[in-house]
Image (cartoon, rainbow, N blue to C red; front, side, top):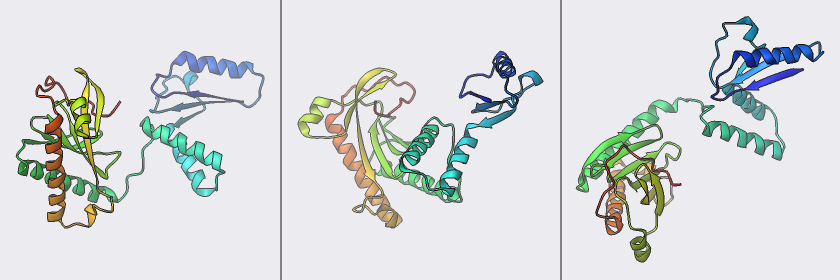
Length: 248
C-alpha cells in the first residue's frame, strides 16, 4: 500500500506527513510506502516527517518521455500523455532540454533585435531595446507600440500597440484586421496586433541575405505604422509599467 502526497506550490506540513504515517500504520498492510511528489526540493529535519521517497515533477515528465520513446503508445494513451506533458510545460513545472542550439540562438536573437532597432530608427520613430520573461524586441515612440517576438512563437515578428489604444469602429470601417479588446492595469481598451511569419513560403526570411532581411523588416514595420496611425486614439494610456499584451 502506498500513499502519494502531491504538491505544486503549497508547503509540505509536518502534521500531514505524520497523519499519513499513522494511516499507513493503522492499515494492517505489511508493506507500505509514503511518497512525496513536489515541484521544489524539501529538506526534512525531522525523521518522523521524512517520506520513504521524494519525486520531483520533472522526474515524472522525464520518465514519461522515456517510456514514450521506448514503447509505441496506443492513440488514447499517447494523446493523454502529450496533453499531460503540455500542461506541465504551461505551468512551468517541467522544461525542455537545452541543446547545442543555445549559443547560435542567442546570437541570432541579438542580431534580430539589432535589426529591429535599426529598422525603427529608419522609420523615424524612437526606439529602445526591451524584453522580459516571455518577450524580446524594441519599444517604439516611448512605448506607444512595440515590435519583437514572443519566445513561445519565435517564428513570428509581432507589431502591436502598447500605450496607444485604437478605435475599433474606425478599424472596422477601414477593414483593418487585428483589433482586439485587452484588459490591462488601466482598464479595458482596444489594442491592435499584426504579425510577420518568418517561416512563410512567400517570405523566406532565413534564406535572405542580411540586407534583404532588414529590407523585409523595414517594410513590415513601416506598413504597420501606416496602418496603426489610421486607427489609433490620440490620447495615450497612462504611463504605467508595461502591460500584458496577450489577448484575453
